[in-house]
Length: 139
Image 1 (spheres, helix red, strand yellow):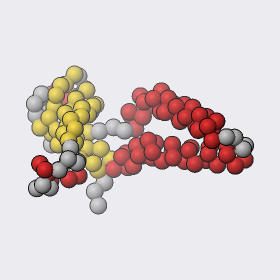
Image 2 (image 1 turned 60 degrees about the vertical axis):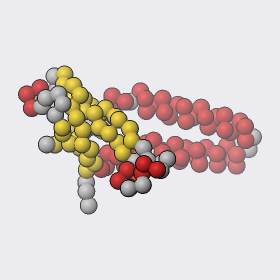
Image 3 (image 1 turned 90 degrees about the vertical axis):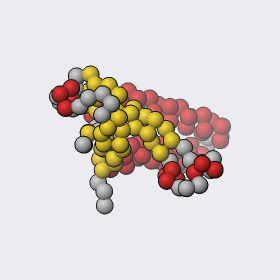
Image 4 (image 1 turned 120 degrees about the horizontal axis):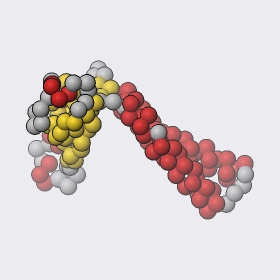
């Protein structure tokens, strides 16, 4: 079983130890022969930031490289983006509607505020999370 996520990309820019790599993220059905007739096939270009010591000496702009990330990193991102909010929704609605006997509109309004605070906290911690969610280049 693979323990890393890999994407092939092209180096867009190099600034000291910071390398910007352009990857094309393809939908799961992108290898299908009928994709030209299908409305669900899609692809997106994304820029991945990689920090590597001595990058200016190792790589050059336009070079094709493999950008890798740990599979556990992807699982953690899914937990933070979807798992925790789903848990917050379930727990809050149970508490608000069963124990506190709040109305539906009040419960959902407060839930929206709780989720906004949660995602704002994630936003404030983006620099700390960027260190945890690090990518590297393999040739």
